[in-house]
Length: 409
Image (cartoon, rainbow, N blue to C red):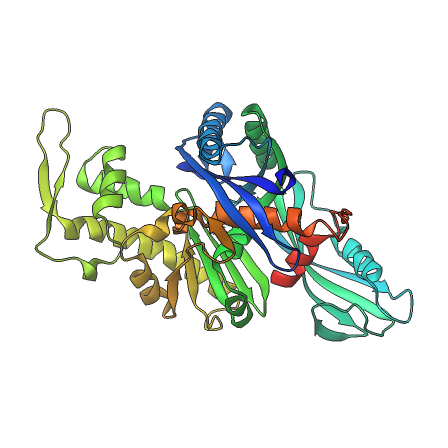
């Protein structure tokens, strides 16, 4: 069914990923059948912000064409992820009187509207609104008050806003590539849908997205997203350190990191030797792999330490029983799980998409595909959940996506 087809884009600082999928299941148990995957290298995006529209457009075109070629079809619209240190979150509260004896969905919509009706400033636009909890006559801790009896309804809501210019330039790049943005979606939320279980969100966990230009952390507790922050350091800093430490080119440093790198020095054989490409006029050199691992270890330890500081500042240190889930290209570094366990002193695992997806799953079972696959699950939840029996469309504003945010975050 063509109305169940979706396309997603993850625009990172080093690579652009595209996924084409078909919605499966129903509104209660939606899923995604992966039909096509594409990616392209890019230098047009830095820390979640488009710096070069022409280069970004080129990478979008290449990634989407590869995905469309694999899927054997063309999709005119895309769901696009957005992240970076320009993303802001704030807590807002709303209060409304109950119109009748029992609280209805209309009452919830009214109190949500009150919480959303705050000024974000001229430079920001609202991306998501995520209810944290409802109160009925001062009784808190309520996820869904529909059907309850009371006179006073309150909500505590997390508002996620993005910088206007960052969003506009992202949309412009997609449009120049010949596609239309259906919706911008916060990348950590998308990644969590593909990699984090409901139980982990309930007992507490941190999703750490190790990107090239930045590192994002989203904290979940009691089934909701409680904290979001971004650190302006990532895999690109590791690559730069290798360039400086070993005297190699940027491209050679990237290859060394991927092929021989290790983020945890104790895992490396002290006698192991690797070959390093020589510069102009010089032949290849040999160095101990331990030196490469030491460079990577030091930078990643610093980045993870900053993440740990953000979690502590948010008040969740020692409260995340499910530990940390690592996604993004940096999560594929050898030894990164072991290093993260040492820094956080809690359980750590890779976030690999798998739950809720079928099709060419083997093409996306890696941490770097957490965002584009999560976006596909987000999108298919809309197209599958957006129909009632008889094919009647549900109101898109207060329909399946809002209920998804309430249920999962």
